[in-house]
Length: 322
Image (tube, rainbow, N blue to C red):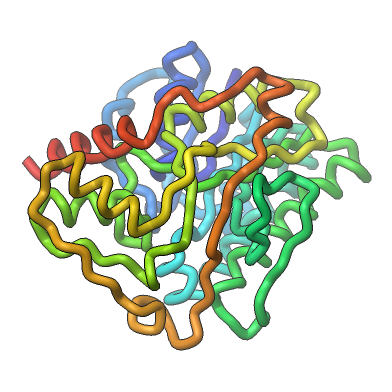
């Protein structure tokens, strides 16, 4: 296939590029490098099956051109990370709403199948055990910047679903739960690379809040296998899928695990949300996915555990700093 990946120079996108090229697909990446990195895709430059287009999903003409030349679109471009969303809300909203609208418009124009990557943030403060795709969203005040990302991605989902239902656009929606692994950076609030980098330096590990909030972390290689399986599947069209792991751990427990596994001398320091982000910042106490739907369709389950994730992130950070 000729696959367009928006945001393909980013963390997840670049791993997707690797996997698709490895199986023989032709890949075009559209990325403005606002959060993606050229180093993530540098090793493919010169490959006749790879093309990098420097540009934004907000540029109508550029998006029109790259979608027209693709068979399938995998839409990963987005403003991501709590720090970025809180720090630059207007820019983030424009990218996540208008950018996605342009991509979906062009996919409909040319009849291209599209996979849209959404997020577990959709569920907001719903901390039910094993969140299912049809569960309710529970959000705080719209005046809390924290929830703008969830709102924007919900609009993106509604657009994709509506294009499928009303116009027959083959669309698949995937909600990612805390994808982690090599090439992820801690600049935008990503907790695992931040903890690992602090531990490798012997610096204090900064835990935001009281550390009791619980999350599940899924290796990017497992996530990529799910994304490819879903974009290949006709049965997945018009559906939403959770993709994530079920190995649950508190953030304080994660800090302790990183210190122990990397044999670090780091201490743990707790930082209030007000100091880390903004006054009145709200977080979720728990977020665990029900992945029965993707398992039932593809037989997909994560093959790597938290120990593998920590080791791979540490190896990546060490190689980049040497």
